[in-house]
Length: 186
Image 1 (cartoon, helix red, strand yellow):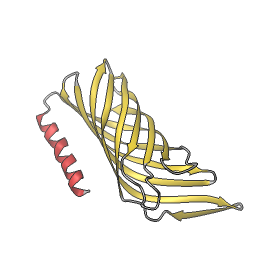
Image 2 (image 1 turned 180 degrees about the vertical axis):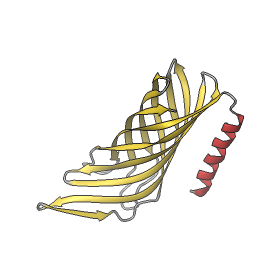
Image 3 (image 1 turned 90 degrees about the horizontal axis):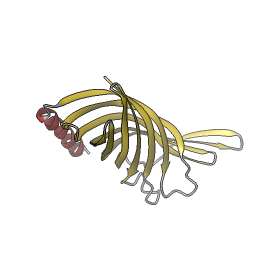
Image 4 (image 1 turned 30 degrees about the vertical axis):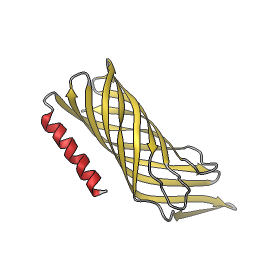
């Protein structure tokens, strides 16, 4: 995990040093519609994400690189059972300019699990517990679109396709998260 994060940080620093075109940064947040694949009856759970981003223009009007650091609540709902998986996610996106103000955003996302909790109602009593056996590191592939409404504000929609198993006891279960949000450019 450390090697991946160090490699990602080095890549961002190299891009920043060779990028003479421009640098922007800002904050973003929005709605997560999170679920876990391969679990029977797992439904999407509405939650949220919030964080910051840096944007490096690499090739004017063609390509930007945008690393982000996001706090992301994920998980799923299954009847009266709610599973909450809290992550610090670090997507590193290539933003391909399609037309004016519209970009196609693609890239890897590395997630560090902060904690995992379950809450269930059994016979009218709420029971809370930690979820055992969860992996501490998650890799996803992020894909989406961003549209810059005005110079200081964009709207974005993204799907994060989980690539790694969450738990050895959950047969091939992986994260699947739809994100819809806004970004404020500083």
